[in-house]
Amino acid sequence: RGISPVKKTVVITGATSGIGRATALDLAAHGFHVIATARTTEKAGKLTAEAAERGHTLRTVLLDVTDPRSCQDAVAEIDEQTDGGPWALVNNAGIVNPGAFEDVSETDARAVLEVNLLGVARMTRLVLPGMRQRGEGRIIQMSSAGGLIAVPFNGWYSAGKFALEALTDTLRRELAGSGVRVSLIEPGTVDTPLVSGALARLAPPDSRYEAAYDRARRIVTARKPPGPETVARAVRRALTARVPRRRYGVGYEAAMAR
Ligand code: NDP
Image 1 (tube, rainbow, N blue to C red):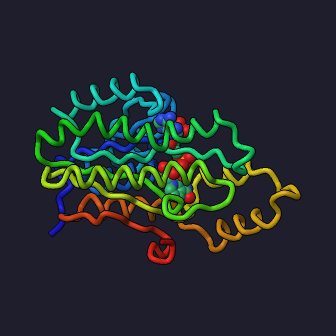
Image 2: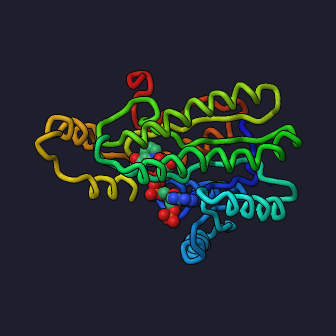
């Protein structure tokens, strides 16, 4: 028998779009207490209304993972709402700033690492003491197939996700015996605004990059990508497994990618 969702509070960062939104709605529908984070009250309200339309409830908290103060305030609010902290944290918020290595500015590179790596670390560090104290908890990291293989024009995204894989493996080893379980979700391309936005922002190939651009496009368009609901189910599998796996590949053969 798996873990029961009853009285289990799960915090999901970046829940206003794509995979985070699908995960928040899926977990709420399956009986978890969901606290979904949003960057604006407007988007928070939209998500709450969407859940209500489906007959589910979820709570929202405002959070920008790049702002340490916002992370502290959000976790303080969550601690208050949950009597000491959530059972699980799904570090999902993420961005891409696509482009060739020699074209991406340092500002854009830093922005990716701020959200996809440091944001994850900030939130994880803030919830861990409560989980340790209770001797129970789950941390789910939304990594990517891009955390295992690097594709052209997404170097900083892959650099951040490779680092996230390493940091998470370290954390799992440090938490051995603590009752806190850590898993990585590694989706291939998923049909979300992140992907459509990245493709739109990727400049058409110039003569420097024709071959690499063809390869990148082939990788992204090799098959019809699954919807974000597929990833939401993988998150639910990780949360409900008594002994969750270290890694959940979604939509590609993890073994082939390694
Ligand atoms: P979306 O762009 O659809 O959603 C990203 C979410 O992150 C939004 O809710 C966004 O909020 C939020 N977010 C962005 N910046 C911040 C921030 N500074 N603080 C808090 N929240 C923030 O992307 P996806 O659903 O596609 O991606 C979600 C995760 O899945 C990412 O970590 C991504 O790397 C990963 N992933 C995605 C894949 C794909 O093919 N789509 C494949 C593999 C992994 P807002 O609505 O305000 O912008």
